[in-house]
Image 1: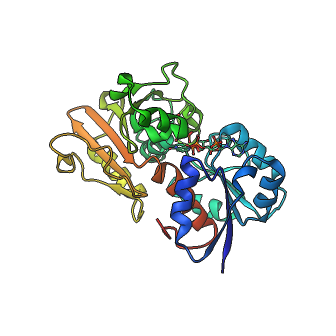
Image 2: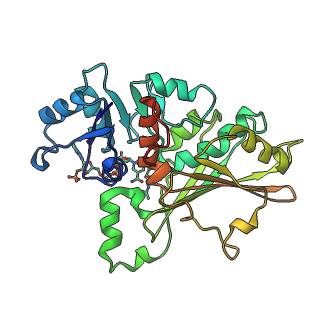
Length: 312
Ligand SMILES: NC(=O)C1=CN([C@@H]2O[C@H](COP(=O)(O)OP(=O)(O)OC[C@H]3O[C@@H](n4cnc5c(N)ncnc54)[C@H](OP(=O)(O)O)[C@@H]3O)[C@@H](O)[C@H]2O)C=CC1
Ligand SMILES: CC(=O)N[C@@H](CCC(=O)OP(=O)(O)O)C(=O)O
């Protein structure tokens, strides 16, 4: 069986990476748009509707426009943008989210891929809310350090042009405290309020690690071991989520956390560090792997009834 796949936004960072994942596959026929017609609505509509699976690797406005062009009821749209992550009728492309998510993704024709920071945040918080260890009302904070490819072509060009000393150091951003991933972080964890979230972009291509500090004094009766056990239970048998042993400083290189350790993989590592009543939860991943294109291909495989890890 051959599946017809179209990537709208094939020249962008996420689109190119999806092409790389799919290039060697004999079961996928990749439809390509002529370079001069890349933004031609009629030609995009033709290809979107000819596809079994259409990936949208576009800015939000263009992704909304692309969805409006799809009228083939059999086309499954997998949107990598932020446009539909909490929209009704769309299924969150995170198979490991909760029991039932895989069945939902098999039948969905509209799949919305999680954001890179949101993937890490949801991976850390959802199991703890589901297990009743973190109450929905708990105020939560998070920081995340990411490589510059997360900012797409424009940011990659800025960093790779060289000559700007400001870019040599990590840069906190989204300091209006209104990052675009906040709505999905709230919606897909069950928290009553979005976290206070500060992302930081650094002078390296890719790799992401998000940290959530917790004070056990705010969680009566909860222990580090209970948190660890909740992760192990939630992610038991998951091939793309690895829960490292509690306080596993052996996974740290010379006492530092390597945020690039999962690059070129579709894996998320979950790490729990504890000292007395203070706890630090960390999730790390490749922002272009499980944080974007890898997750999109995993969702496609699952939707088509194939081995979820095919090509990943
Ligand atoms: N980079 C990352 O780590 C992640 C990105 N995402 C999301 O994925 C989406 C794509 O991001 P990314 O690949 O980084 O972005 P890029 O800027 O690298 O690529 C976007 C591509 O879309 C093209 N494009 C823009 N408007 C249109 C249009 N109207 N019709 C057709 N093509 C159009 C652009 O064309 P042109 O080349 O002419 O500019 C560009 O090639 C975004 O919504 C982003 O938020 C999600 C997770 C992670
Ligand atoms: C460094 C950088 O700018 N990163 C992007 C995140 C990219 C991503 O995963 O998010 P979307 O899928 O929502 O684009 C940002 O924080 O806006």
